[in-house]
Every structure is written in structure tokens, then in C-alpha cells.
Length: 189
Image (cartoon, one colour):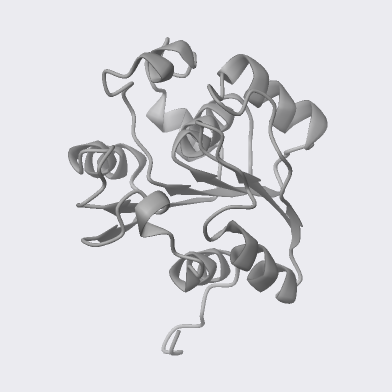
């Protein structure tokens, strides 16, 4: 099974934060992990990223995408357009937050089709933190209601990067494994 990592904007990379250890953990479980650098890393514009995901990284209905920040936004817009296996959205939001770079990204030009995002994948897992300096907690809480997805809310993880760099993210690994290989009823996770 293939997993594709999608970083955030502002020059973020899939070599930062928890991405490298997540890659190691998932590869140890037999996943094929794609951790490439993306074009247009500063603005992360939809016009570059969505074709890159489809044409270059070959994301398809058997692919799990893991997106951080604007990478999570790209994952949602991708799921509006095509089937994917599932997605993990970390530090996600659904508005441009009043930021010019977010407005310029192109992800917020159209209303969200929450139903299509849900129906075009088997599962969605959303990670948020109440102390995120960029994303008001109301954003992911609203998204969870719209997506009707698995939701993990923290109080001390910030934006899951930067000053809150977490090199290990076992909860994310466990979420992927539990969604792909659900424990039998009565079995401890």
C-alpha cells in the first residue's frame, strides 16, 4: 500500500518534523512511502500541487495521503476530485484565515464539497491542537463535523511543527494502522 506525504507551505518539507520517523515506522509495517519535495514550496498553490500529486506521484484510489497544514488542504481538494484510500489531516483548516498567502494558494476559491471528500475515501483522520498559533480550534472542530471523521484533539502540540517539533508521532502511525487493519472486536489496540 502506498502512502504519500504532503508538507505545508512556507518552504516546509517532508524531511522535517515527524515525517522521517513516520516514514520509517510505516515502511517497517510494509507500506511504500513517497516523501518527495514539492514544487512551489513557499505558496503551495493548488495549480502546482494537485497536478503534481496526480501526475507525478501517481496518487490513486489505493493511496493514503498524509498532509500537514496546507498539505492537509491539498489532500482535501484532491479527495474532492478523485478517489483515494484515506487521508490523515494534521493542523488542517478550511478557510484562508485572513492570510494573503492562503488566499493566493487557490484552495479557497470554491466552497468545500464535504460530502464528496467523505465519499471519495474509506477513512479520514484529523489531528488538531487547541494551542495551535495559526489555526483557531474552531476550524478543525467544524471540519470534523462536516467530514464525520476520526478526530484527535490535543492541548499542547501547537501546529505540529516549528516550536513544537515532534520527531515521533506514534498516534499518527497508530491511526493509519487501525484504519487499514482494524483490531478485531474485543482485541486490545
